[in-house]
Amino acid sequence: MRVKVKKEGKQETYNLIDSWSDVTLEKWLKIVDLETGSKTEQAEETIAALSDMPKDLVKELSLRDVAVIMGKIAELQSKQDTTLKKIIEIDGVEYGMHPNLDDITLGEYADIETFIKNGIEKNMPELMAVLFRPIKERNGSAYTIKAYDGDITIRAEQMKKMSADQVQSSLVFFWSLGNELLKILPLYLMERTQEIAKELQTETLPKGGDGSE
Image (cartoon, rainbow, N blue to C red; front, side):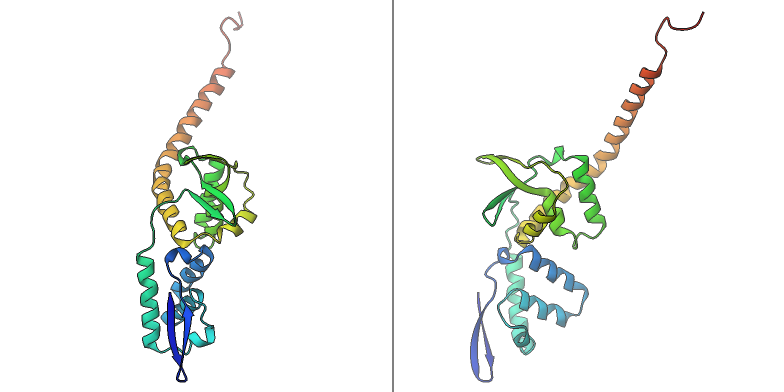
């Protein structure tokens, strides 16, 4: 999308994002981080992040121009694609969302829980790096992904290139499942603990006929 700005009698044209899918996770996090600041700062940084307009020129925009540009950005955001995409491609590499989140390991869930507790906005790339991993094998919509080993530093950097709408749709999907997991996990752990206790008790009980006379 092109935006025309008049300055000193001259009209310049700049590029603004064409759709919300053009917004990367990295840019989106910068915008989210500004929500605690002033409206002026938020508008200035948002326009600078989502266009190729020089920052010093953004500061010189009239309030009318700012209102028009922010209105267009808001319109694009409202039209974002909320369809969950379980397979994404970044720099030629395909990443797949965990094929079956019901089978997520305790280690994966523990890391996800930690990232959320420590601030989901600050740890969004890391969270996506747990949920999305390189695809090892694929047949149509069916695929297998690399096993989780906890080493996500490099992948988290790649996840910063994800589009914001992909991140948001993934979070909505995961959040729905997460609420169910939070209910199921304590019950599962309690049941498993009871099973282990029974097994240990059985192993330590004296065998029949071994008692003293």
